[in-house]
Image 1 (tube, helix red, strand yellow):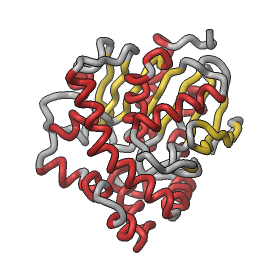
Image 2 (cartoon, helix red, strand yellow):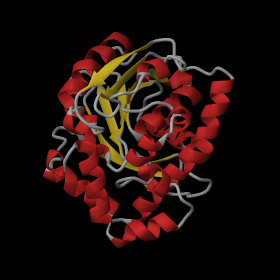
Image 3 (cartoon, one colour):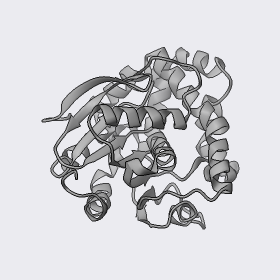
Image 4 (cartoon, helix red, strand yellow):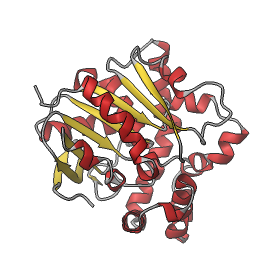
Length: 296
């Protein structure tokens, strides 16, 4: 799925990261979301690699990236630090980030905690955790029920997921993509294979536990002190997901950054999966404006 890309296997920041890298130029870090792996970038990474050095890892504990030290909990802050170490190991001190879902949450935490590292940031389908939680209502809870299931104390969700992991991930992907038939069979096989591993399922649960506890606390502290992303921000979202909502993601992100642009895109939650052409239509010119085609 990644022709002309090279697999990597690198220990950095208490993680044995696996993923792929390809292309040349200024670095662009692609961060996938739940319940996927770096495979979600198979349509987008080759296009970006024409102009940039593209790095697409599995997030810590997801896919084939293994956590070497489980404690303390893998908050987005700890994930961000590990990603900085990964990029340094690959020779990149400053880079752009494109994140979807959970990867976008790790991405904005990295941009807040390590502002000198991030040249530009693109968020696909995500607003800051604190804003998402503050807006929880009946509709949100019904649509994103997995937030509250996966974040239950260990090891209740893990035991329940073990009963039929394929059925769970297939339902999650079908809901996100608007039908399981809209996910490439080869990609679906990769996601199933990863989710069958109990360590991967546990890492996902820990990810969601951190989101409703430490991560939201970090967000509240940063919001109260007026912390802002120093880099330009591109925000893309699913128009169907946010139908009927008064505030747009751009409105929300403007409380966190001075330079925010973006738009809604047709399709469901899995924008890199089902709406990659529309994503590229917005992402390519955004990167061209803010990221040099050759690393300085």
